[in-house]
Amino acid sequence: ARIKNLKNYSSPIFEKMLEIVSRISRQSPELYPNILLGNENSGKIAKAFASNARHFEKMVEKKDFERLRKFYESLEKNH
Image (cartoon, rainbow, N blue to C red; front, side):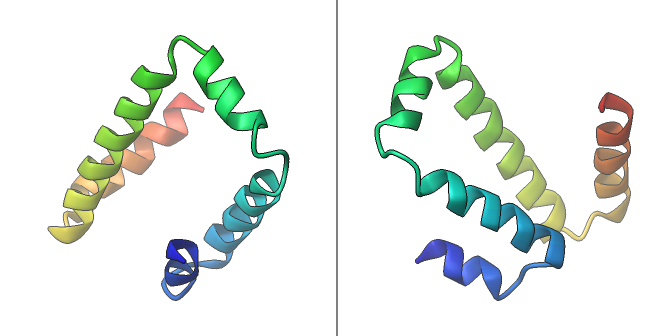
């Protein structure tokens, strides 16, 4: 239900990402929990993801163009 809500606000690229997540989620329900629980770093990764998502949310809420620009600039440099 939450993904359907996201589609109302999404871009074409985001919709493609949702398609990928949807394909992954149609695989065996045991696959990803086993992978996540078998990785000793999963908890750290989940915390970092949540922290970054909160940080991103604040930048968007504040309409902080400069910080968002720097965020995307850092992504370019790191990949």
